[in-house]
Amino acid sequence: MSSIVGRKHSTTGIRAKQAQDTRAKILKAAIKVFASEGYASGRIESISKAARSHDRMIYYYFGSKEQLFVEVLETIYTQFNEAESRLELDLADPVRGLEQMCEFVWRYYLEHPEFVTLLSSENLHQGKHAKKSLKLQEISGYAISVVQRVLDAGQAQRVFRAEVRARDLYLMIASLGYFYNANRYTLSAFLGEPLMDEAALAHWLEVVKDTVRRAVCVTPG
Image (cartoon, helix red, strand yellow):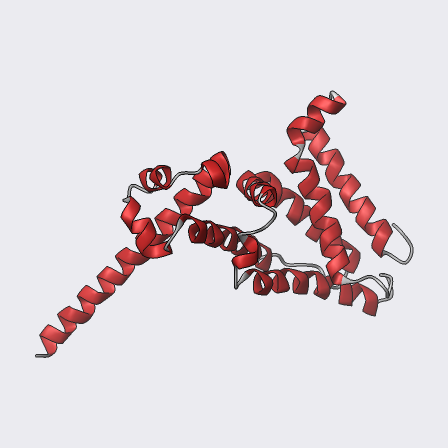
């Protein structure tokens, strides 16, 4: 009897692992397809093909294309938070900690262009899918809390202005990196400059850090 029960548990565990792997492959494929084609043009058939799965499995695990896209948004934000959680911010030197945050966000956008593309796609839809997520506010709460830690350290040492809010600081850092990346092609054509050259990218990172320091520090440095 015990051997039969053991086999049942083993089989159940294998099936659960297979289901988890299939779901993860579909999400990974959906991120790729939606990032390259947008929500409107991203087809279920393309996603199932990229995942080496079947259309019916997408509906089984996610219910609809819309719910799949909601989970894609939740996934990319969660991945951002997970990467940010591995940062070792220098709270003993809050100004340096602030610079580390700027560097992290900037490099994350550069290294994960799908993040920027998917958010741009969702903004074209006026955030209607993001509004249906039950998790995004919780996810954003963590991101703001990371900023708050650095801000608290700087305010405690009286090197950051007391009236600065974590939400505003988060928006400033995010927007300075996001706008540049989301508009890289049109800005390059408009300005007649290769904005994605290594020197141009390094220069803009310094601009970001300088702008944020001047906005936050008691004595801009």
